[in-house]
Structures are given as C-alpha cells and as structure tokens.
Length: 223
Image (cartoon, rainbow, N blue to C red; front, side, top):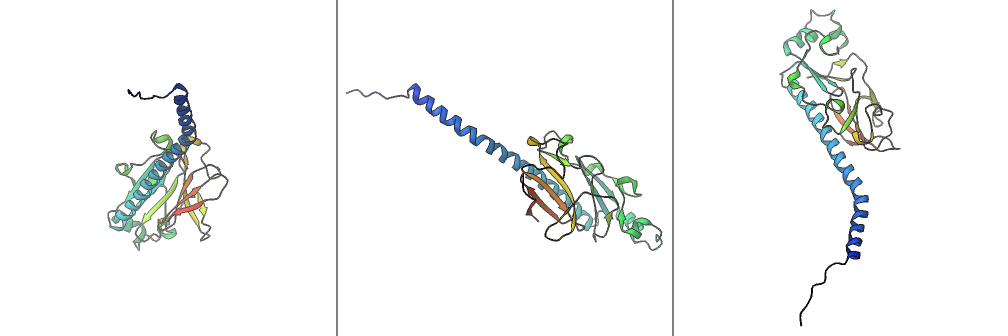
C-alpha cells in the first residue's frame, strides 16, 4: 500500500507563525536591552582600564602627573616627572599655589601640563556615533582626575560628586545613560532611567561602578 507524507495545512502554518510572532514580541525587547546593556558595560570597562593604565604609567615613572578630563571625549594632559618635581617638590617653590594647596589646575591652564592627544582614544555620546551611551558631563567643565604616584594632588575646580552611602565620602562621578531611552539633555544626575550607570573615583583613583534602575537608588555592582 502506498504511503503519502502529510504536509502542514494552511491553518497549522498560520498557528506556527502566530506563536513565533507572539514570542518575538516578548523576546525581542529583552534581547535588545541585553545587547545594549552589554555594550554599555563594555564602554565602562574600557574607561576603567584606561584610567588604570594611566595610573600605572605614573607609578612607573613615565609621567609625574596625568590629568584626565572626562566628558564626551576623554582628554589627556601629562606632566613630565622633572616638571612635576619642580612644581610640587622643589623647596624653592614655596610660593607656588599648586604646591601649597596640593592641587592641579584645569588642563593646559597650569604651566607644564601639556595636552597629549596621542593618548586620547576614548569618546562617548555626541563625539562617537557608535557609542551606546550619553554621558554627563558632556561638555567642559568635565569630571577631572589628577593622577600622581602618591595620590596627594586634588583638582582645584568643582567636580560633580556622589556621596557613597557606605563611607559617607563624596566621590567624583561620571554618569552614563542608555542612548536608546535618553537624550543628551535628559542624561544628568537627577535622571530616573532604567540601566543608568555611574563611575565614581576617589582621591587614590579607586573606581566603583554603580547601576540605577528606574524608581530605585544607585546600587554598587563593582569596586
């Protein structure tokens, strides 16, 4: 007796397509959000790694001081070890306000601190169309970090800060918002968005990563 293979009927095919459609409607947003969150974490890791690399170069004696200005691009300023010693360690520079106050100025406004554009490889938001985030601050004045071997030099200006609930100390902060649900204007410290991140940095350039979900407080996820 000859056997015939039974195929799908039109109704069965429509049912399968309907099930796939329903699954996609629920799964696609979750997959899309997961991909974006992964890309944001990648950008955060790149910045964290870069800060640690600059700290390592200072500790190794390549530079006396490195200043990083964090906004839509990461500007890099360096000071040679010799010039750093002249500015901060020379006993004859007692009238030097940078030495007396243990502070660094903003970029090239401080003598002997020179912009090093060859080190500038990281950008975000409007300065990088491939970036998954908007950042705050996005224009100067930026979040400024002054890296020295003994971690005694503090930026003379005013950075945006976040009070660490665990220590009660104010930490310099840099905020990143998902590009898909925010704009450059809505990405700011008072924003209430899903999957916002912030990087906090203390005087020793120790880094903590925080995540915020809409309607909730910042939660430390690393550091």
